[in-house]
Length: 281
Image (cartoon, rainbow, N blue to C red; front, side, top):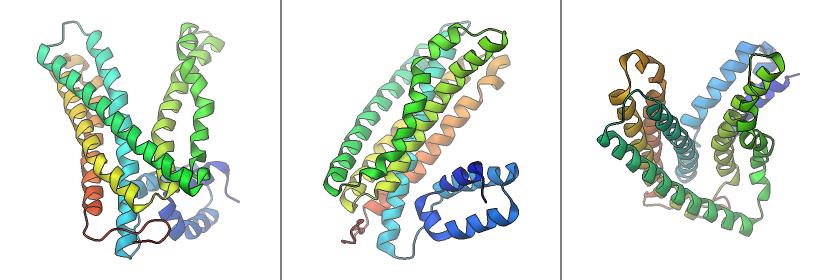
């Protein structure tokens, strides 16, 4: 039998991958055993499967899956950029000298770009909700339930941190104040991407989401450039190694957003309309 950790790792793969290789992968895990190294390999493989989704041979269905994967990945990259902005602002506010005006202006532009991209994403979510109300496929939205247990830890994080100290009980309360919001932010980034995949939107909605994802990708890129420039220009050399992961992550998110949005837009602008979940062309 496969233990819970391995089963969750298998569930982390995209539906298209599980449809094609799920049974073989599960049998392989049963034969090799669900050791921690195997679970880690499964999680790495799931990440690769999301970045390079398995596409069917049929060109129309392949384009539909391409757009679906592009929309999900763009959402994740937007969340990464959105989380990076307040962290960078906090680091600069605690710095030993004022932030240059040019860097501050660049961060302001990035903030407005992220808010504008958020409005685009809200419109896309409303379009997806409207289609779900028409099809009645509300079970596809079930992954959002995972937000409920992590939301209280996000709301109560300041209270938990206020009681943090080196005492054993207070130490774990403080750890909950840090890890709880982190779990909530990760869930916010992952569960909507899973919903988009499970909803199997129609070709019309996917085209709208994929084309609007180009604007979101440029907003993520603007944020990545702003965060990287702000930290490199305004961070002392001694602290540069500590803050370097932040611009590295934002640059990676920007690259992923541009690549996946470009592929999704190419599929959306194809001359032939991709099929929707009901098989219409």
